[in-house]
Amino acid sequence: MVLLPARRALLAAALGPAGRRRLPPHHASAAARLSSGVGGEPETEGRIGPTAMLRHLLLKLRATGPVTVAEYMREALTNPGQGYYTRRGGIGESGDFITSPEISQVFGELIGIWYISEWMATGKPKAFQLVELGPGRGTLTDDILRVFKQLASLLSKCDVSIHLVEVSPKLSEMQALMLTGGKVQSNPKDDSAYMKGVSKTGIPIFWYRDIQDVPPGYSFYLAHEFFDALPIHKFQRTERGWREVLVDIDPEIPDQLRFVLSPSSTPATENFIQPEETRDHVEVCPEAGVIIQRLACRIEKDGGAALVADYGHDGTKTDTFRGFRNHKLHDVLKDPGTADLTADVDFSYLRKMTQGRTATLGPIKQQEFLKNMGIDLRLQVLLQNSRDTATREQLLHSYDMLMNPKKMGDCFNFFALLPHHRVVHPDKKRKPESKSSLPPVAGFGELLLM
Ligand code: SAH
Image 1 (cartoon, rainbow, N blue to C red):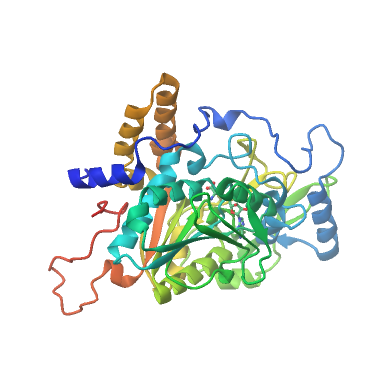
Image 2: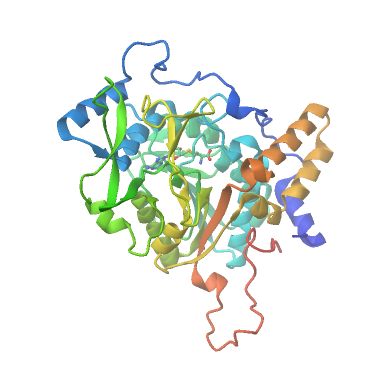
């Protein structure tokens, strides 16, 4: 898409000349390097015996028998004592995996513009909440807040607040440091939040463990690499019908886990496999379904929009469950709690679970969304304003990471929930062929800033 000149000017105004964020990490070979250096229990390499998480799981499996992959994933990632996100939370160059906001400030800036564009397209409501699910280190919200600051005059009459849904105490501490400089109040008595503070730019920020605790109201929701971290159930087609994949102790090798199939169908196989399913292996994430349903209900009732960005598919892929440690693929059953576990997001399932309460757009490829949002123009501005060769090289490198179809450009997708009236004109009498006066939704069409 080509930006019209007037819109170019506005995009430039929103983003400022160069921005002041730190240089993004240089990680040309991110997948093949980096030591751990992240908190939590030491790695098993060079150590004798299983990790505390594995000991906990072995005890549990001995007592109760095999568990679902969803139960295993929940324990490994968010167990309050030993879970990966609870203790390690290794996002970033020195961690286990890198995400787009950690690669380039431009990513969060363009998402900030997306929300402003939606806010303007719906008549500039007097207040909005920005609700981020799984904010990681807080970098994405920080970049969005910088855009809001640049557009302070536009937002001057709007009451903006930030609401972060985060289960990890370790990551919420990092977010507090990034966004408020560490000045936060824990367990405020007057709120459903477990922590609150004020951003460096003067905007109130609240932390919750569950989306249900976030107060109702016109809200913009954001979930970047959040849904892929939620627990999945796995199913395998057999000659005797569908069976659920379970995690059990390997009887041959001490302290080792293995996958087994349920001897008969389980409640999950009955509920989650559609009769018309053609694949032989299916992953379903019911928790993602519940959360997207909540977002759809909230948007239907109070207005706003949700932007989901993640790697995923539209109900076509089969076995996508994998682990990452130190930027390398890691056996999902090895040393649970020391590696990130993840599965591709099934956007067709998310769409289905909105139950028609909202309209949905996408999924579209990250490179397409960012191009529509004006990433090329932003890159030009940053390049023009950078003085040294190293910075320019870094900018080009991070652009390539985000946009190259062989890197993050094609496998990451953007998907949005919007009130029906935002995309389909409510006037039913309107002839279908008549041109809609509704402004297009940025990113999924033409960027509109007026
Ligand atoms: N959005 C960030 C981080 C992605 S990692 C980025 O792109 O950099 C996943 C994030 O989701 C972490 O912050 C993790 O602690 C959080 N998380 C995982 N499971 C969660 C759950 N059930 N509820 C709330 N947050 C969760």
